[in-house]
Amino acid sequence: MAYRSTEKTAARSRATRHRIAAAALDQVAEGGYASASVQAVARRAGVATGSVYRHFPSKAELFAEVFRTASQRELDVVSAVASAGQAPATERMAAGIEAFARRALAGPVLAYALIAEPVDPVVEAERLVFRRGYRDVFAALLDEGVATGEIAPVDTRTVAAALVGALGEALVGPLSPASPGRQEALVATLVQFCLNSIHKEDVHVRAHTHA
Amino acid sequence: MAYRSTEKTAARSRATRHRIAAAALDQVAEGGYASASVQAVARRAGVATGSVYRHFPSKAELFAEVFRTASQRELDVVSAVASAGQAPATERMAAGIEAFARRALAGPVLAYALIAEPVDPVVEAERLVFRRGYRDVFAALLDEGVATGEIAPVDTRTVAAALVGALGEALVGPLSPASPGRQEALVATLVQFCLNSIHKEDVHVRAHTHA
DNA sequence: CCAAGCCGTGAATCGTGATTCACTTCTTGG
DNA sequence: CCAAGAAGTGAATCACGATTCACGGCTTGG
Image (cartoon, rainbow over all chains, first blue to last red; front, side, top):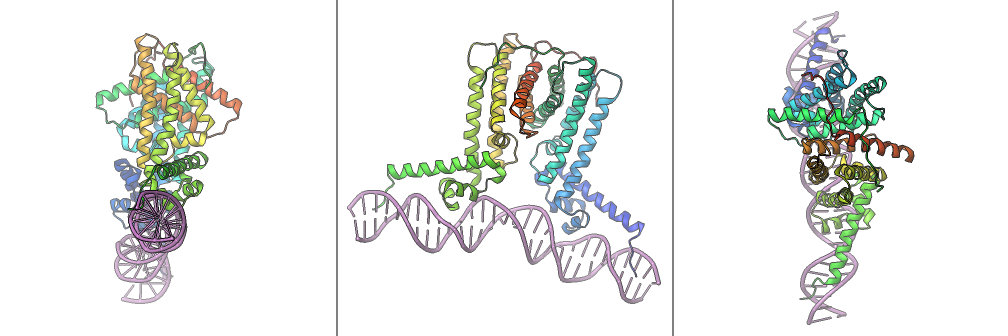
């Protein structure tokens, strides 16, 4: 025999793989998924297009992993903020929402890609997992708030989903790179919106029309 | 000379054009945009693929028109419901939201396509117009409510956008074909959620963390 | 230094679905 | 009925980007 993979080669291989993934993330953060062709990623990583396939079975798998990692990082932050301290659920909710909003505004192109940009179905599936993750974090807080009587009983799953949708739309929909001052106002508006929506006492309305 | 287009031929042409557009809408309503290849549309309309191009310059233009028409119909309904009667803005808001939700649940595949499915950029642009349309309808109601003191002053544009996002996510996100009974509950939850979010008195929270 | 065989390369290939176009069929006014 | 030309046809073409692969070049253990 002659060649056997050793720790050194494995490390090199891991490093290259990591470089490719990092390049893919950079590309998405800079120009969105639409700009992230395999060639563009390879160029950015300093390898040939074919080399991408030495480390990932397909473009879909590469980006599934990239999205998974990036989304996990975001979710971890929100999750950590939302479960830190002894404050009432409502307050931790506000903190989580604020963290979500600030991070989205800090990297709008990446946020758009992670939340709303059209992507390959395989990547979309990955995205869904994390969307559910956010929903579940919020739903857990809502359950807690309902249990302690902080907020009125509701279908927490649905409300949490609505909150995720509201944040996503308001943050990545306009895509307007609002000035820092405006961003503060936007964050404040959204936090207030979300808190209102889970108010303790339900708002009453006299009648519903049926369409 | 010999041939001159006449009223009869023009009518026939218009009819075919309409048939193609209708087939395209049917296809989207049945299998989503992803299923709507030009060939599939042509087959459904009973014409050859090439004929589609006699009536529309491109697939993108065809679907831009289809989306425009379908979205306008939806927007008109919500808009009409929201501006009918003398009820306070809040109540008309509830009625509009309810109409939106019911219609989305009645045609989930079409709703998904109109709201969230990945589509061609040209079609996406059309979709954005109507998304703004919904936002503006809600924003106008909010402005009215703020003016009459029904609700607390807010950035109505942003709040309206958040409402649109919340409804979209909660209605087309799960895609779960909830049983009719569940649908009623879902509609009720969403209406309540939206009304809460625009409550007259803001909910207070003691502190914000800064991420 | 050598043979074995992994690693990297990037031009060629492939798959998919929109778009074209040479041809046929239909309408029209004379 | 005829010539002019519009409308309809659908197989062939094209565009585009992912994926492959035959070819060096490098590493490794002996």
